[in-house]
Image (cartoon, rainbow, N blue to C red; front, side, top):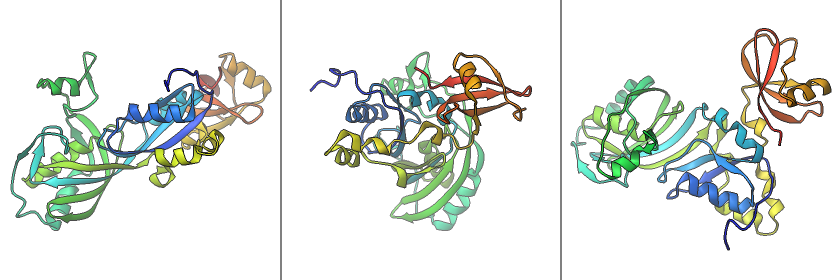
Length: 304
């Protein structure tokens, strides 16, 4: 059956997908969109095909908040193989020897990890989705072309040492957006003098959500087996994805003005901040921007 023979349902909300390893984020998105028979969907916070774990999928109006989710911190479970390096930074690339691990032990690793806590500079890998003049770097890398990349500052909030056995290093990493875990493992390997690359990567936290809240594609298929409506309750309201934003409840007149793109006066808000807007029925209608004049302007509204 063609996936394009239906327009799909107009549904709104966010799915916390537990993406499987081995598929791209876009492929996972298309599979889920088809499963839900959704008219519109998009993902936020891409994962490499090798990686598994939390991938928020936004449906319908919720796609308008995708940009606001990207700033959230992430948490990863990662296993790295020390003693070799990979041209892709993971097990899918060409491997080569780098250095011996005979002097690497738990204490040495823990001491090394301390050097990587806080704000650090990372050079994005060639095998990444970053674009150079419109072309993803990984496409250039596959042709053997390497271009200079500017180092970027990221924050490593915490690195928990879990295990080191048979040259396999296991960690949990809490970090800011834009952090490349493959690059982090490579840097750890270089500091240890033995090299390293990722063999397993799983995103176990996204902003304030935990992997325990995620649903695998297989779990969604089982829910759908009896009725399509069985999978809709797993969707989270878009406003629940933005707990850090203050909520503003509007009266009827204010709701009408905001929906027509007009700014409103809202006493009590006297600073520049993004806020969640709720209409007179206390239904979430989108994101607003307040200023120091106690005004609120519409920014992204959930209105067809």
